[in-house]
Image (tube, rainbow over all chains, first blue to last red; front, side):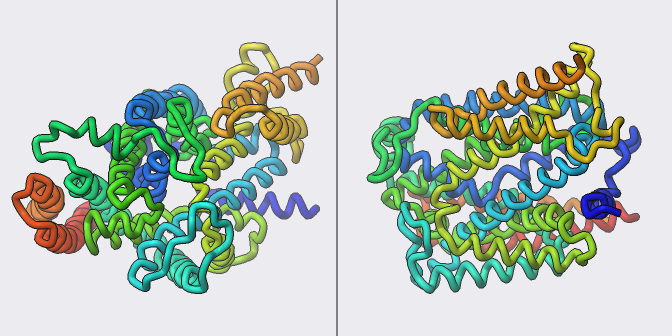
Length: 452
Length: 62
């Protein structure tokens, strides 16, 4: 057996448990989707993202309109792009992509995904480090920092990374259940923190001057020194693409394959609006109350006390845990003979090293944009193959039919789209949309030409 | 197994977290009291919600 065949056989074995399409008796009710989305989208990153909008000088009107419309577009992307394909195929993206792009491309996609997960988990650890570091008087690195600014920061990041990794190895499932207990409380930490910060900003109990304070002291349209000024379009696109890999990139096929109807995609609103609107607004209020300083730990401590610090720590922990698990699962394709604990340990070690570099959490907005952008072309390839090919009578699933390990067209479209996106003279936040169209058109055209 | 009492008590503790911040905002209580109430209600939430979750799990398992 060739090396690639060995690797793909091992990879298939890992995902064997969800190889078959979901059967009718396994479909889930709408309530389950409400719970899933509501729990998953209030994470540690919310403490950072909402605060960054303030630091980037977003105005109050731009923020509210941008988040309302951007989240609407995200919900529509889940409902009109991701859910219909998931409901029709009842497969995870892994297995559907394997049919379309072959095991070789799926393997590369898995590795890219694993690296993205590691960086994201590293950012979560950094956020938790700001909470623990507060107790030891460790200063959060400045906004332009790439490297750690003190031995203390490295020690805290390593200690937290080691603890999170150990817990992910010892009790991933128990921790997932604990995360279910944490998530409603973390949401309350955001709301209560914002409410309690209002008097510090001068909001009167009657709320008569709330809009005035919001527009002059919180989202006053003035970026802090060294930070780029962001406006309505940036906020709208950010809210839309912050889960790009999940909706347009189709990762959430894993969830929606259990949906009874494609309209269950609308339940994503229960994650988008509380998590990516309300929580971001709340963290914006909290950061304004501490003088616009990016320090999630101190921000929550000043607003909610010790419970706030615990909230930041737990938000980092409970979101790093599944991220580490997913990274481990994806990385296991590289080392199929390794036991689960060993691969989680490797993913955790890599994540811990990344967490020491504050750049990943201090440039979180840009990283989130890149994360979605890098995986987006694969979503376009799958969309084209699923919807456009039958319309144009182009042969579907060639990789599966002709037992091709690599669908070279899909790989070329993926890499080519990323190169074009890199060269596009647009703000990073806007690049994915033309990139998606380019990937869709070029993949369809290339496969149509192959037919003729 | 009756899950009603831990369910109700845990929801109430979560509500208390929120109410304490509202009372502080309205100037009814001091910041120190608000933070202390929030902390205690949070601890109550973690204990009660864990009990609730365990009971639900056992109920599902029959």
